[in-house]
Each structure stands twice: as C-alpha cells, then as structure tokens.
Image 1 (cartoon, rainbow, N blue to C red):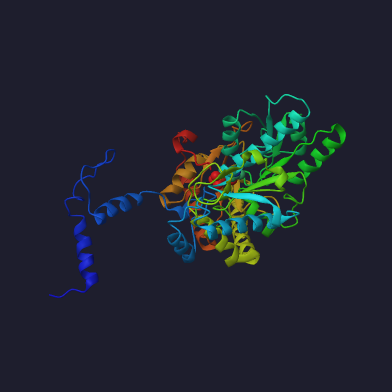
Image 2: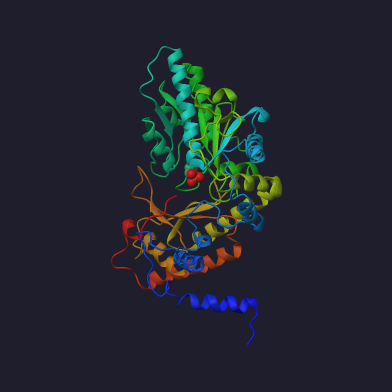
Length: 464
Ligand SMILES: *Cc1c(COP(=O)(O)O)cnc(C)c1O
C-alpha cells in the first residue's frame, strides 16, 4: 500500500512513543552516555514543557506572551546575530542606536539626536546602569567639594527587586519609603525627609510592581527644585519606567514624568513588557551625554573597529532589538496607543466587575491617569469571608489562570492583595471568561468555606 509522505511521517511519529528511547524514562540529572534521535529527544523535551503553565493565562507577568507572526520570523532570521559584534553586524548596531533615539524623542529629550543610551537584557540591567551613573556622578560632585564618598544613599518608593540588588551589590544605603495605611507609593514629602548630601539620586517608579500605580514624578521633581533653592543641594532623578515608559507617552501624554523635567537624568524601560518586543530586551537612556560618566564606557578593539560599550553583559541576542525596531515602524504611535488603550479598557472592565462582587475592594482600577493596565484589589476588611485571596488564587489554577495573591512589603505586610496585569493578547473575550471563572471560584467558597485557609507560603507567591 502506498503512503503519502506526510502519512509516513505521521506513522513514524506515532511509533516514537513506543521507541526504545521513549518507552523508558530519560536520564534527568546526568548527561546520557549516548546520543539520541533528534525526534525522540525533541518529543521528550517538548512534552515536558506541556507541564508549564499556559503563558497567555499568566496574569502575573508584565512580560509579553503574544507576538505577531512577523516577530517570530524576525527572531528566526536573527538567531545568529550577536549584538555585541557591532563591527560584524553594523546594521543591527544601527537599529539599536535608532531605537535609543526614538525612545529619547518619545520621552521628550531636549536633544534626542545627541542622547546616549543602550539596549540591555531588561529593566534590571538598565536600572543597574542608571544607578551606577548616579553613583559615579555623585562621587564626582563630592570629590569636587572635598567631601567624603563612603556613605552613598538612594531614595525610592516600594521598588521592584532590581533596586534591592543594585543597592546591595554596590553597597549603597537604600532609603526605601515604606507604605503607610492607604499610601502605597512615594510622596514628595516622604522623599524630602530622606534626602541629604549623600543622596546619589531619587528613583520614582512609573508603574509600581505591587499595585501598578504611577509615583508622582513631577511633584517629587518640584520638591527637589525647592530643596535646591533652599539649601543648594542638587539631587538628580532616575525614573524606573519599566512599564510606564511605554504607556504614558501614548495613553497619557500630558503627564510630565520624563525629560521634560530637567531633573530627570535617565530613564529605564523594558522592551519586553509594554514595548511589545520578545523577552530579553530593555533600554536605558540618559538625558545628556554629560549625565553618563565617561569612566563607565569601555572600548573594545578585538571584534574589529573600536567600539564603545557600557552594558554589563557582553554577548547578547540581537533579535529582540531588531524586533523592537520592527514594532516602532510597524505600529507607530497610533498602533501603540490602540494596543495599550485596549489593555487599559479591559483592565477597567475587570476592575468594574470585580468591584461589583461583595467581598472585594478595588485598590487600583487601571485608570491610565494613575498607572498601568492592571488592577489590584483586597478582601474587605473586618469581615470573615470564609476564604483568603490565596485560596482564590489556588482555585483559579484549576482552570489554568494564574492570578497572583501576595502580601505587601513594609509597612503593610498585613495587607494581602490580588493583581491582574492586562497585556496585548488578553482579549476582552478572555477577560469575560476569566470573570466567569472568578465568580465560580468565589461561589465555590461561599458554599464550601475553608476551615484552614491557605497561607501565602503554601500558595506560593508570584511577584514579578
Ligand atoms: C519588571 C520591572 C523591573 C525589572 O525589569 P526586567 O525587564 O524584568 O528586568 C524593574 N522595575 C519595575 C518597576 C518593573 O516593573
């Protein structure tokens, strides 16, 4: 009997699971002695990935989980491009430089053509570079004034973990403004209380991890202007715009948080969050060449040419950068605005629906004037609900939804919240299906109250 080529292939694949490789358990913690058929090894690995969660149902992550087919093709075409080989791949280097200028322009740099910046692996590396520039600049100021440089501090609100890494790795005192009562972000007043001549900079976050809210960048900048007038202390700012850097310019362009404020010396953002690029790219841009100490730039001559580099990593994939540039061209401001606004609309829809349910109180509702396309809520206080947010998060997992529940950092460790991040690809339709499951989960606990509610540790926590 004759088979078409595809039929034969299918038969072979059917037999894969009966093969000598797949009818036994593969070694897991030791390299096997012998090689395996690529199709067998492929199935073993890909099947294992089946046990991962479905990324599109992961409402905890800020990172992209959906991309157009063209992005997949770009990533395939650029798999061999190492972005550090700027002499070998000058056009990829050119696209990176263009992205930096495009971002500088988007963030209202007074001289976008002459700003400096770089791609990174994400906001963590970008924040590290921004922080280092602040540290170096502060040392210069102190030395010039004949003052000591051994006690640097930095002032932030409740920050993402990358800033804890930065302060610990660089031995900098972290003056992190704790949450108090209903105040879950920094205020100008709280910032001023913590500034002195050893403050290397103040870092507001545009889209705080815990709730999604924007910190008041302009108010802080104004307060620091006043401080300078009164005392002569000139304290620079870096904005952590990991999410907000790709949101405010499109959905709330009037918000002054960027280089329109002269005190803002540098900004980081995550290309792989609302920049809509695939995982593995971030950006940091300085306001002025002056703001990036020359001392942090290295020149390498062994790749051909004499190329400046000032990132922490060396070899890095170039595809994400190319995809970022593609997005800029493909979407333009109009496309970004449409996508981000659709996310905001869905976040506000969800906040509305969850707010209607008896047990919950919304803490942040996805309003583009106050934060990112996300929502956060808590259980109403002073009521025994018969379940916790950790029970709810656990129950939702039975339908594949990952809706993280976690407790806040200092001084609101007593406050547990649940949060949803709305990203491109989480359609209104999916959101309404999630709401059905959410109501079902709540009703389940109303009918079957838990006697021993899950703790945060038992439920696992999914902060990002
Ligand atoms: C995600 C995030 C970071 C870290 O960014 P990565 O791109 O994941 O390295 C830093 N700060 C804030 C506010 C974030 O949301």
